[in-house]
Amino acid sequence: MKNKSPDPLAPRWMDRALYSLTDGLVLMDETAHVAFWNPRAEEVLGWPAVEMVGRRVDELLDRIVARVTAPEPVRAKLQDALALPESDTTIEIELIPLPPALNAELNAATPARAGRHDRTRYVSARLFPVRDADEKHIGVGILLHDVTREREADAMKSQLLSTVSHELRTPLASVKGFATTLLRQDVKWDETTQRDFLRIIEEEADRLTEIIDNLLDMSQLEAGALRVEKEPIQLRTLIREVVDEMRMSTEAHWFVVDLPAELPLVLADARRIRQVLHNLVENAIKYSKGGQITVACQLEKEQVIVGVADQGEGIPAQFLDQVFERFFQIDGASTRRVGGSGLGLSISRGIVEAHGGRIWAESKAGQGSVFRFTLPLVAPDTGE
Ligand code: ADP
Image (cartoon, rainbow, N blue to C red; front, side):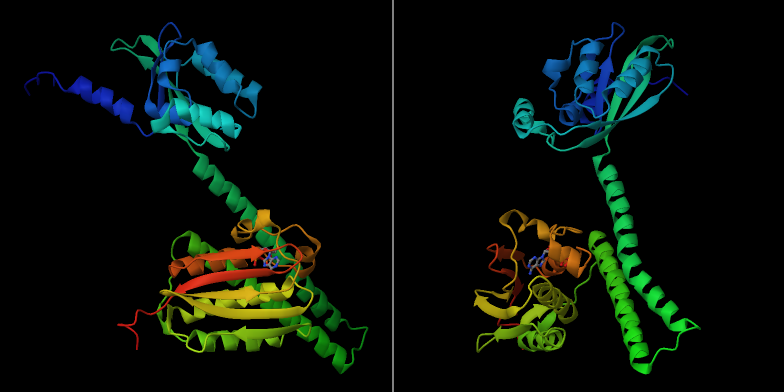
């Protein structure tokens, strides 16, 4: 085969490829000075190329070490890898979050490549020798791969595992305890006691099912696989059914249902909206010792706003958004008392958003809470 003449475009392409890499790339020359710093390295580390190119390697080390959680081990590993780069070495570093003002300052220096330096970032740094055509060592390259998402997902999985095992353990212990008690050979239980114990076993088994259902919903939501099958539904019937069912579970509360005389059909998945209503009413019961629970609807343009209000302990302003995060529970006596997994509201939010709606909480401490969500009305021309 004939030798091809060198492509005159190739050097330019190579250059652009290095600039366009989705990983950060830093090159150190033979004299241990920074020779190249691509845009993604600016974003990952926050320092602009103009400031970094030409700096000595130890200055770079000092800067990195000042920002990691484990400075000394990271310094030692980076120094070793930079001094003797015979083969590739991968070092994972955890960058500590910077104060917001410093984050803003860094981002002002590289506005086109602003990064989130105000939160913990995990970066996998891969150091490799750079050699010329004669295999002569002419420098060191560092590829910076941001693995924050992976690490956050790992942390979430561990949290999920510990929550799941903790949550499942309590009802399981109850089932086991009451079953063992009933089976004792040396005691004869009268029929009422037997039925009481069996009822507890049944309730705890229901609780286990509920936790598992919640976890399944959560994983579907996360995978973007929660399907809602929307059809025109009568919200009035749905609300009445949920309230009638929940009324049975409490003696300390009374219910008021406040609906407009004319309530048009909404476009929704009845089973899923029932689940949201059930969760909100259940919370209203759980987080108030007693009093009135009001379920109300208001019409507003093309949507309906559904509200569930209680007269309970309320939610401090700083938690009004956070209560919708998965596993989030306000650390208070009642959360501990009533149990729960902290998943209900995040699932409810997922369901409402899958309908194109919005959900939020309003509260004044000590004066109860109102949870509201919106649902689209069936457009008049498609309504039946
Ligand atoms: P769970 O009730 O299982 O803990 P949720 O996701 O339903 O989980 O609720 C999250 C947290 O929000 C609860 O633990 C509680 O601290 C708070 N919360 C929810 N509803 C109310 C309410 N109506 N009044 C006061 N606090 C509430």
